[in-house]
Length: 133
Image (tube, rainbow, N blue to C red; front, side, top):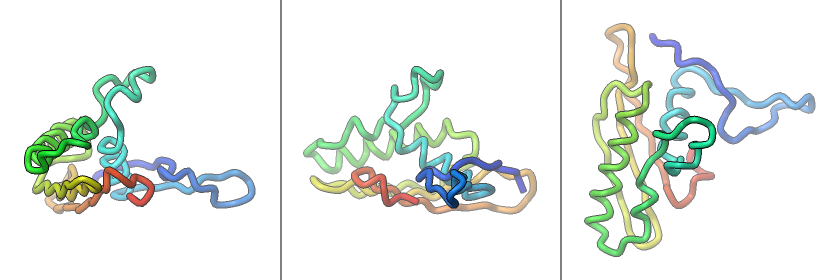
């Protein structure tokens, strides 16, 4: 299995009174990398040298033609996932969009150095990013 490394959990929760942050590793870190990319608006990290990072889905929130918006959000999500190094294959992307919600449900296969399939499902509410992980 691929080593997906270790990072701080995206909520930056302190786990003790010494100031240590909760960490995430392995497949959970790979999922967090995907979520971080999908929840980042393009341009937000330009000053840090990440000028091609993020998800253009946010540009389409507020459109009133729901079917058209869903297709644009699905395409933007696919484009973002194709740039994420931990994603080997996009299995499915489902978008549910209306005037108050945008739920993106993705199924991906993570990169692997063996024959073991690592399929993951991630559901993201683009209107409520606090409840993602």
